Length: 117
Length: 112
Image (cartoon, rainbow over all chains, first blue to last red):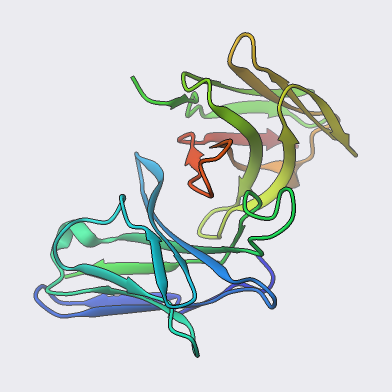
């Protein structure tokens, strides 16, 4: 997990509030991925981003969820008007994106555990 | 049917035992196969990485891929209590850019 920084580690929100999760990739990595982990469902892909571009958001719920990876600063996963079902661990991963295997080896952060009251 | 099937366990073994963890998959396009270890309330940690079929060894860990059977395995020799964790298999399709599909994870407990 060294290098991929996620914050906060724990986030508590009341229903209807907004949650903002941050991810700084490993140094030299330009590709960021977000996953959600629910207790009985395993890790599920949400979105894949490169700097200033969303490459694949096929795993993102159509409403209330958005992600960005600006030119400067961390990647942000935003959940608007949170509901109890959004409670989960959210993991960010990064990869260098270059080289034969560069895109396929993803390194994970420690995660943000979101609790919606 | 899920693309990747993995027995969630839990699997309990005595210290020193050989552990065998397995996944099956249905998507023949998968070419890259990984094993991650996840300790409780931590992020997944990459253990092993294999491209296409074959074996790969790293210390006490051996990863095997049998594409003809769509079956991958992770063996842990001389298991230690510190190996107690959840082990996730993960796969990527060639040309699937970087969308990783994970198994649900097998929870392993090594008893001293």
